[in-house]
Image 1 (tube, rainbow, N blue to C red):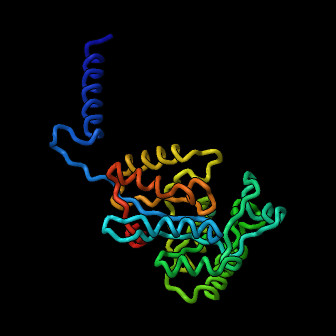
Image 2: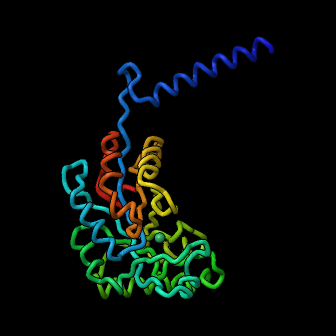
Image 3: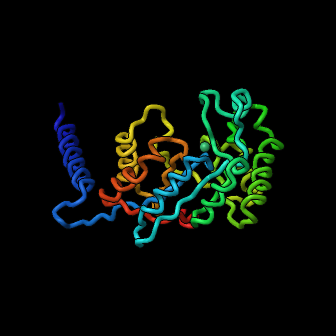
Amino acid sequence: MKHSTWIVLIVASLMTGCITGLDAGHPRGQITTKRAEFMLSFDDGPLPETEQVLDILATLKAIDGKPVKAGFFLLANAPEEFWQQRFYYAPYELWIDKGSISKYPKIARRIKQAGHSIGNHTTNHTWFRWTWLDTPEAVQGEFIEWEAISKRVLGASNMRLFRPPYLILNTSVRETAERLGYQIVMGELAGDAVPNMTVDEIMQKTQSILAAWNRPYPCLLIFHDNRPATYQHLDEIVSNLQHQGFQLVHFDAKRL
Ligand SMILES: [Zn+2]
C-alpha cells in the first residue's frame, strides 16, 4: 500500500474517533449537547382505546410541568365491513379496527375538551394508490366529508392540519391539501403499527430516532391509538425517553 493511502486511513480513523466522541455526549465536559425535543401524535382514532391514551397523557408532564398536549389525527367514518375496508385500505393491511368521529363522537369531544389538537386523517383512511381513489374528486371528497362530520360533532375549527394515511403524499393529495388551506403534518413512525413489534423494540426505535435528530425543530413521533403497545404502555415508552434526557414538549404545529 502506498504511503499516501496509509495517511488517508490514519486521518480517517482519527476523524471517526472524534465524531464518535462527540456523539457520546460528554467529551471531557467541553461540549454540552442539548438532547432533542419531541412531541406526540396519534393516528387512526377516535375509538374506545383512545380513552386509555387520554388517561395516560393526563399523567405525562411536558418540560413545563403541565400535562402534555398531543396531536390527534382522526378519521371521520372509517369503514367497518371487511370488503368495504378492502376498497379503501392498503392491500397489505389485515382486518383492523380504525376510528370514526361519527361512531365515537363522545370520544372525539373528549380529545378536544382535554385541549389536544385535532387534525384531518381523511374520512376513510384512504390508500391513495388505489387508482379509483387517486382522482381529484375522490381526494377532495375525503377532505370535505371529514370537515362536514367534524364540524357537526366538534363545531367549527380554525385548525387545518392534515396527515395523509400511510404517509402517502402524492401530487393530488398534496395539491388538494394546500388548495384547501391545510398544513401537512408528517412525522416519525414510532413503530407501534409494525406487526409483532414489542414495547422494548418501540423504546429502542424511538430512542434512536431522537438520538439522531438534528433538525432545528422538535421531532414529532407518530403513534396509533388502536395498538396495544401504545394504549397500554405509552407511559413507559415516553418515560424511557425522558430518562434518556429527551424533552417532551406540547404538540404545536406552528413549531414544525
Ligand atoms: Zn393512519
